[in-house]
Length: 524
Image (cartoon, rainbow, N blue to C red; front, side, top):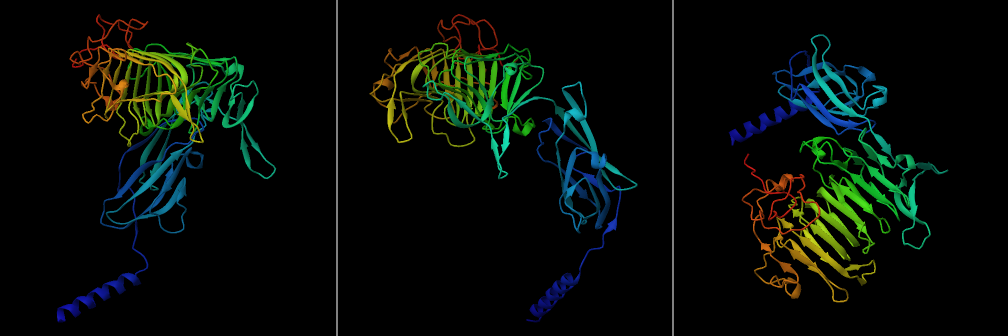
């Protein structure tokens, strides 16, 4: 009992002593800090677009509570960097460019958060990129510094106009065009604007940054040169309207990492942490009535839907896509709706729903393509490849439309789910398809998929097929879908397609390999 009362008295004394102490004894100290890094690289940003927030951790390794006399940006108030110092005491503001008497407890640490927004025109006048630097200084006399480095890129910015109402609210320009095909322009709620005539040629001189939808007006063509880079802000995309076209004229690159001649569509966040994040922008929308759309040596990544293709199912020139790649789509890689798509040497991977969805009927001819889906961000509802011949409207009415043709030849259809094919049909419309010399993941031990369309012995639908054999992709999680010489897809193709070479412009052997890539020795 005495021991208990002694413990209680001691505890109360300590509690009273600590509550009466109003502050710690902080000793002004310079030159004794340690940092998590000696240089903070804020990666690459576009001019006038804010960066992500980067962190620097500052350590007090001593046994004393210290006060740092000053923390400041070397360029002072003229710096394009902004700081937020975490864990400060007193009345000093948390955000700014200079701080005094910053307190840090013994053996403790604090974070400094760093951001920047830079106008490249204030730095250079004749260059498309500029390396901007500054430093954070710690102390007054015995100063310690941490360098700050940012690469700033110039760009062509395309954005809708903004209007201010009398009440002060802001209205953003929206697109008006013939939505329903009746020859009359319709108002939409799609924020964006039509490209001017002098904007219809995207070059590789500067990147393009698009806010809202950049639209191609009726009867006009957007030409995109080899090596062009097109970046989209959140909720943005391209839209091609009635009798308009998009020609993405990429070329083969010699460097598989730089893709210097490839056309690349992606988001406008250039930091490495965003390089593989799905859903950063919306889609390239080939609206009903658009025609003669072409993509060659094009990479589309990190969108919601890579390419959305509507209508014109009897127009064989609706969409021709060759030697192209679509990755990291949060919903669909390619979504066709009652349309016509011809594809050769197409590679799709990592889609939140289907990598290729041929819906609401239409005409599809896909050759020597790799339709994979190794999505791992969440549960996905649909397989890598989806075919159907109907649509459900907003009132839940089912509207049928003929699937006149869906031909897949020399294709790999594979992924990390099973099965990777869904044939979703209703009897009110035609449902015509044919798989020939394809490698398909479809294992159904419990006979959940029945009916004549799943009769894999019926040569009207399936011919010379390979089932459930691992294609041995190089690294599907990193979107590397090349196959080795030992792949079961090697040498199993048939004579098909018009290009005569694989996606790397290497002549196809005879017999050809299945998929977009020729089989190669991946060990060397």
